[in-house]
Amino acid sequence: MIDRNAFEDLIDKVVILDNWADPDNLERKIELLCFALEELKYARGGETEKVSFEEYVQSEVRVRNHKLIISAPQKVRNVGAGTSPIQLQAPLLLFLLLNHKERYQVLDIIRLFIEQMRGHLTFLDFKKTKTGVTRCFTNTRFAAHVLRDYGLLKFTRQEAFKTWELSLSGFLVAADILERRSRSQSPWEVSAINKDAKLDLATEIYIASDGLQNFDDFVRKLSSICAPDVEIFKTFGPVLTQAFDLLQSYWLIIKDPSKSQQERRKASLDRIKALDALGGTFLNELARCIQINDALRRALLSYSC
Image (cartoon, rainbow, N blue to C red; front, side):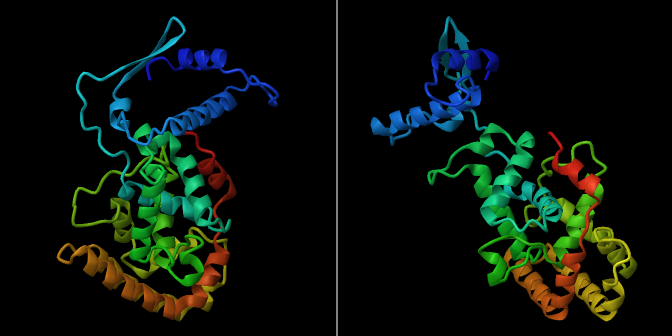
């Protein structure tokens, strides 16, 4: 879009709101105009796509003499598919950590996460699929499903169909991402694409596992996202020791390029099930102890991209 201000001025002049509260509100005018155009398309039986989304995003849109002019691209190029699910994994883990006490439903998590990420997404990410769902909505769901398949999100009947919750390994990875990204000037940036197509987790997840090679690092990382002086690290000492040993095996599995994606997912889930059986009570207690610095949490969630 070449001249957004001129386009907004045109809409403001053309669309008149009658009997609406705040009739000069431009956002409301734009929304109502979108509905009116959708209704017009429906009334005309416009089910067949006359212009592709990719053609539009490469067109030149401008306003001249109170008319909207849309010039077709000279050559339609491949513009890609926007932000991929793997690029959303690390930011999604961070978002779930910062909001883990909110108990949002899945649809609300996706909506709020997309709003948080909006400044780092592109218009390509908001292309509507044939089902009417935006691409970034679908990709966020795909990102969560892969994280769940690897045991970074809990997967029981209680959570699977209602909400997304971090597992023990998810808390550890999210704590590392929080530590790194809280020092960044752009904490919600889209993760780089993993260049190794054999591995289907974000690079930041593998980096997090590299920093958890000894027991002290493991406890320190969990402690970093907990309220100070909590007793669970003393009460559950034996459980922590066994959990650490299982996690070492888990990290090796998810980074093993000799295994197929299916083999890695199955083997990693086997370890996660063993962790759940070992420390289900501990994980519940840990979740209750999670406490992110309020100022840091507010700063990250209010960050304007």
